[in-house]
Length: 145
Image (cartoon, one colour):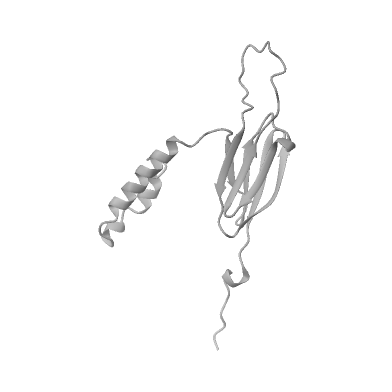
């Protein structure tokens, strides 16, 4: 509910023009709250907008090497998977705080967004994205004859 509060506030004056849509917004809020409970939080990530048409997904993947991570696009989905073969080499671990468990993160991309590259720096995976706008969709000035 807290995530949709700004969304709801931006549409608070719509009831002046539309009738009966308040139930739709309440249903969307309920669905969001149910789905948010089941979203895994491992590994943590950030999504940054670096320019008007560029984005970066940063994901904390400490303990994973470049060969342990696969990045694929499947239609409009960006899928990042991690699976390490690191076996527990030391049996005298007193506290296990690092999770080396496999993960899958999925992001839905707009039709115009393309993955440009990916790099790993100090345990942080950075996936660069760019929104490519076709020429026919770009704004153009029309001269008056």
